[in-house]
Length: 288
Image (cartoon, rainbow, N blue to C red; front, top):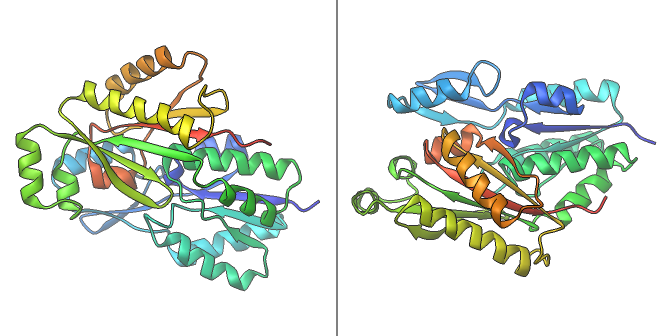
């Protein structure tokens, strides 16, 4: 039985400490603040990030440095027979495509998974990959299983401020100005590789209702699990602890048998949407 290492990046929401406990490995995402480089979860906390964002700092995120990726694979292959690498969705970053190209030089020993996930849904993929590795699956088998179920997951995100979508060029300044004037709370959807506009809400309460209704519909029509018994519901947020706990309580009233976990959204997402966001996700349980 081959010994398989599971490697991901910090867009999964898995901290360095959690990675040690799980027996997996996590690349910290590089974040440039006023052209100075920091690494998510290593020398950059979420508190510092949002403080700098509020000050109007120039913030950009970047894919892991190519040399660092290769060095990590080489180090892991000294101890493991194979590596499964689960980077950020190919639709949101070029790191997946770059890694797949680099892996061609590793004679199949490195398998790059493109299951097009981010945040808590990406974390679930890492959990599944670890279980599959522990059950004796090869790197190729793990990649095939995870990519086969890539559309069995949806994320809905309510954005609290339009300022950062405008900064990132995702909406026009005019649309942002009108949206702010009308106090619109856009709800975005991520399923597969696309980040799309899903709905417009006028209040946080309405946005939460829209997202919960969408999750219920996806369980039925997309996941084929109307009762939700084979679905994992998870939540995420950007600097919005109090509201996400309220949202969790509301979701538990609707789905009382679920063990809903909550994580901060990764800094890559936070960079584009700013503070105050709420997200809810549904993912079909992998039959392992």
